[in-house]
Image (cartoon, rainbow, N blue to C red; front, side, top):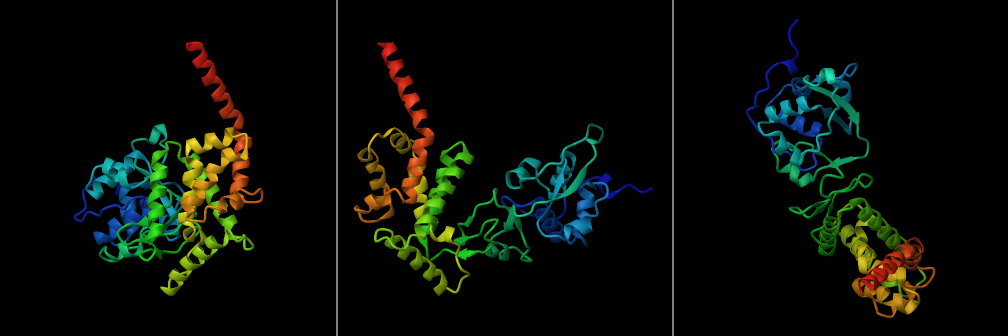
Length: 329
């Protein structure tokens, strides 16, 4: 019985393919196969690793949003075929790993898995620059949502459109601030929670149509939408239109100084500086702070919820610090 393709020595293919940041393993393998004129991409897959039992590669790989998992031995073979060290591949590819059984750890193995809405298309303009214009799939959580070279918004797992932002520099700036905010905090999940809260506040503001103080925001968002519509683009999602204002809120509610002051404030005048700061950053009239601090305003609702959840935490910290200073004396 002749050995399987995965049992033969792995050799570097003639043409290397540069991986895209966050690219799925399957997308990269298909591009590598096409660049080297492999008759069928699944042939290269079989040369990389042995398929799991009862899995037909052709059947699974014809489906959208499918991924392959490779064990460590298979990842090493992929690196050999790609002609680059495995560490370099891992810097670009998430490379989901297939757990090894103790008896099979030396055998290169692969298995397919559905990845649902965790991926999206890479920048269409970047793909067009690659010979053959190959389709490239990337993980939403591992790839940038903005293509800096072409100034395009590349969509999310739920909003699968690509929008040209060359006429909206304020949105590009907002996404740079977003990236900086996430880089500055070690707890990414916490920042994401606060960012989601900021999006919720902005969306709630967009539904307020009878307030004199909120009207400038509504008009601003309508003007941004009109810019995209005049360029003949797909309808821009609300999350994109509101991104600059969302970032103002997110930066404010992530600031540890503001969070402490709000949680420990006894009276409204002690909170007023926070509302004045947000209004100033939003570019609204200073008098709008009173409207945005009203009990039925979404921002005020977040402040009250924050005070309810964290007041005791900050008070305990303050008491402990006071006792510590007295002990030192």
